[in-house]
Image 1: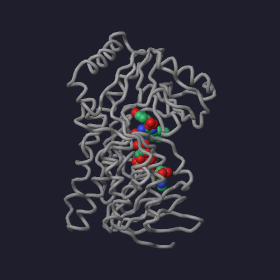
Image 2: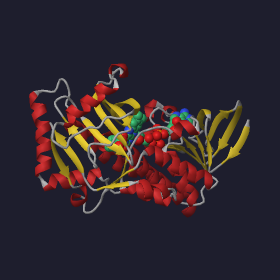
Image 3: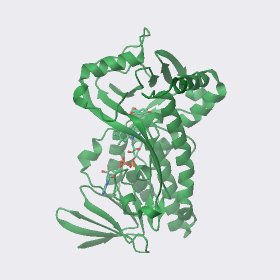
Image 4: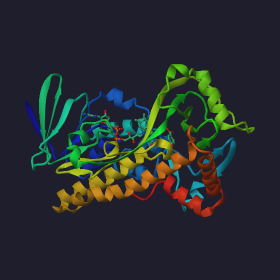
Length: 393
Ligand code: FAS
Ligand code: PHB
C-alpha cells in the first residue's frame, strides 16, 4: 500500500471537486482529487449550459475563465412560450442589471482541469474503489487503487464531490441522514444538434403536449429538451420525430422555426428534487450533487454546486489561515440556506411549466394563471428574475 498525504482529499472531478481544488490551491492549501472515470470521459460529459454571475466570479478567482471571457454569451433576457404565444422576460431590467452567461459545463470542466494541472494540481483519474475511511476521527483517509496498485491518502478533511450516485453519501449511516425528496412523473429528452436555435435567447415553452426548452451551445450548436416519460425508449424517438415535436411545442408564430440538423447526442434526464441534511459528518463534507439535486428547469444544478464550494473553500481557509473551526462548523447551515431557496425556485419553475397527465382541469388552469400573473406583474417578474440570475452566493 502506497501512502501519501494532503490537506484536503476530494472525491470527484466534476465542477464541484475541480472548483474546490482550484480555490484551495490559490490559497496555498493542498488537495488531491480522486476521480473514478478517465479524463476523456469527464471532459466529454454534456450537462448544464447556464452560468450565474456567482459562478462566473468563482471561475475568475480560480483563474480558469480565460475561454469563458471569449466564448461565453451574456444573456439579458429569456422567452416564455405559452401554447405558442411568446413573451420575453427582461432579466436585466427586473434583476437590477444582472444577467446569465451561456457556457457549457463541458467547457467549464475542461478549463478547470487544464488550469489545475498546469498549476501543478493533482488529479488522479481512473481511481478505482475510492473509499472514505475514519472520517469520524482526526485522521480521515481515502483508499483507492489504480493500475492494480493500492493507495492510501491521509488527509485532514474529505470533500465528497462525487455526485448523486457517488460513494460519499452512501458511507454515512442512513440513521444520520435526513433525506428530503420529490421524484417528478416526467423526464427530459435532451439533444445536442448542429443547427441554430430558434431564437438568440432561451425559450421555455409550455404546451398542451408538454414542456420544451430551446437552448444553445455557441457558436453553432443548439441544445433542446422535450418533456417525456421517465421510461421513454430512445428507439421510439428517431430524429425526425424529435424535430417535429420541438416545432409543435414551440408553436407556429411566423419567426418560430426549429431548424433541423445532425443530432450529436441524445439522452434522457430524470427529474427529481433531493436534499440530504446535514452536509457534514465528522471530517467528511458533502457538496454539489452529492448533497442535493434540482430539476434542471431553473438551470440551477451546476450553479448550486458552485455556491456550496465557495462556502466550503471559505471554511477550509478559515481553518488553515485563522486556526478557527467557525467556518467548518457553519458550512452545512450556511449552504443549506441557499440550497433550499434554490430547491424552491427549481420546484416552482418546474411545476408551472410541466403539464402532467393526471392533472385536474383546476390544476391546469392554476398553472396557466401562475404564468399569466408572472407576465402581468412587475413584482412577480422581479422575483422570477432575481432567482433565475441567481440569489447572492
Ligand atoms: P458531478 O456529478 O458533475 O461530478 C461528480 C464526479 O464524481 C464525476 O466526475 C464522477 O465520475 C465522480 N465520481 C462519482 N462517484 C465516484 C467515486 N465513487 N469515486 C470517484 N469519483 C466518483 N444542471 C443544470 O444546471 N442544467 C442542466 O441542464 C443540467 N443537465 C443535467 C443533465 C444530466 C444528465 C445530469 C446528470 C445533470 C444535469 N445537471 C444540469 C446537473 C449537473 O450539471 C450537476 O448539477 C453538476 O454536474 C454538479 O456537479 P458535481 O457536484 O461536481 O457532480
Ligand atoms: C442548457 O442549455 O443545457 C440548459 C439551459 C437552461 C436550463 C436547463 C438546461 O434550464
